[in-house]
Amino acid sequence: MNIKYIQQPYHIQTRLTSTVSNDKQSVKQSFQNILESEEAKQLKVSKHASNRLQERNIAIDDKQWEKITNKVFEAKSKGVNDSLVLTNNAALIVSAKNATVITAMNRQEAQDQLFTNIDGTIVLE
Image 1: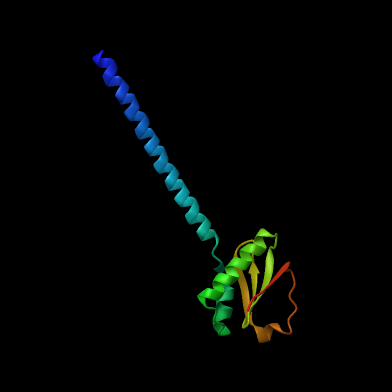
Image 2 (image 1 turned 90 degrees about the vertical axis):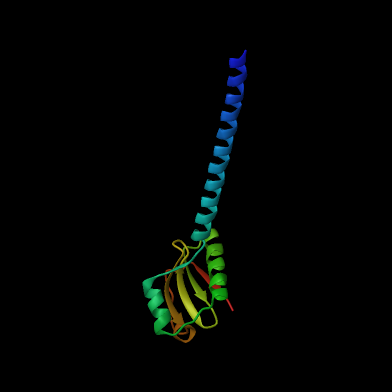
């Protein structure tokens, strides 16, 4: 009889430990999913675009980058692959598919340009 009493709590303890372990694993996976989804929501800037932004003295503040990023991901969700993003001071070609700014120019340069191979335009103030 003592043996049955000792074995039964042992099995219960094992199940509790297993459940806690599974819960920790689930939380870890959920955190990883959130982290990956947040990283996925960031726009990358290609080396070429970074050079163009510096050469042309185009400054885009964090608030504006956030707007651009949100709109690019919104466009991506609607099937846009490559977009022209127009702000007050810049024109950016962005691959929504790859979440990457491909090139940049100031708005004056963009006035007389022909933009090809884009399937969406985002206009921001």
